[in-house]
Image (cartoon, rainbow, N blue to C red; front, side, top):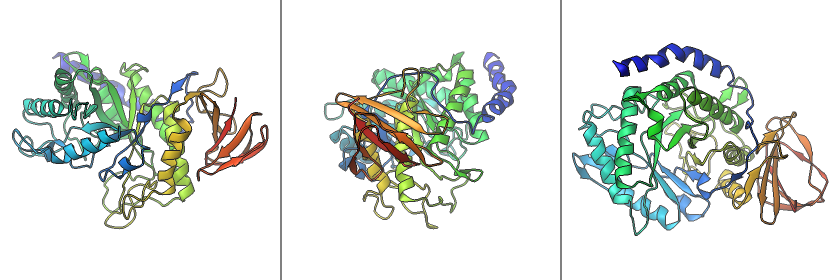
Length: 439
């Protein structure tokens, strides 16, 4: 009776909460308070089934989805596991110092009628998770897999057709199984898409879900959001700034469910132009190479400034759809081979070079990192041992900025360094520009 009564709480509040938060969907977002954010290499994450990203050293973390490593692809019959594919990936990632997150679902056919359904025997799930963690808690003398994620997009019917309570139960079982074998491994909650009404309702349901009176989110070390914006908002393209609006409203919904603001959040999937609904034959609207590169830079800068600890780009090796075109419009590699870096792919390395080894701070003592002014111009300040890097852009128009008096050079999306005079004015637009100065 207690569980049934608690499950009624979201039903009473859902419409009011979702309507209130959706009403703010198109408002610009700025961090609420000043902060200092140390940049961690694991922020720079990707999905990559071909593992070409391991070669260039720009990637710090890897999320395994669409890589042939789901539960139903590993457990080939009850209690029989084929580890070959996962062994290969873990070995490659470990050799490059890349931390691995494994998404544990989907259900094998001998445990449920659909891969998107709850296994009939929860013990089967527990045994599988135990087997995975036992194998990869020590791999070549070091941890092989650092984080285990319960499920992918548990608020999208393409991936989950069970109930919210069942997902909460899976989350608890995952925590128990993982921590029993590797207490320092990270348990990542089920991923939630965050851009349309039904997905928002799914986040709300999970935020209020309880298992034996304990909030479901407490079973996860990390909250996972897939922060794809809509392809368009009216006539305007969905951009990294809109993605941050999705983050802000998801945090608000989670807060209503008691999730503290300090709970770590990972952006486990992001790209732009991704369609809603069925994937049958849809393709993303093409955007210029410069805009693609700008999106990559703005994505990693803004996520870091908002306290997101991992950003896993979907995907490093996006190929062509059968109908032509691609699923997303921001491509890190050429879709023909999944290896040759595009300008956007090079921008991932550029973002890392601008940010790594530094600390993000606000442009003033009272401002938060990557603040936006009245003209809509963003300023990200990154301090490091030998000086300061300031990154500027304006998503909608050209504006002028004045560089610091000690500025020495600037660098744009092509990575070319250009000497400049300190205290001079420069024009910026949607393409981020980094200005290096001594102070």
